[in-house]
Amino acid sequence: MKRCERCDLFVGQGCDCPPDGTAPRAVDGASAGPRIRRETAAEVLLVSPTGYAHVPGACVHHVESPRDAGWGWIPSPERGLWARLGEQSPARATDGNTTLRATKRCPDCAHALGPRDHVDLRTE
Image (cartoon, rainbow, N blue to C red):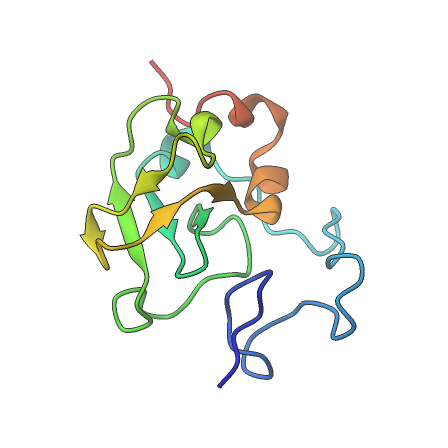
């Protein structure tokens, strides 16, 4: 089974990305879920097998059971981890599939969190 390179879900079984690979799915006020509270977002970061960091509930790129799907996660991520994510500052999963590392932020999660949350997920 083939995984979508954008959302990491199986094509035809949950992937909501355009089949032609053009612009990503639009997220607007009508289709987006509720905005994620910063305190909740800081509780865990999910790490997909394709190297994307996701915030549970902030996008549709989630799986029923991250462990069964081979994902990893980072419980209680340190302050500023979301903002530092990149090739030079990867975030390694500390639970689940601990061989995974995130080097990219999910664009839909970043959109759902809003601009202030790009700086820090966690509050003081």
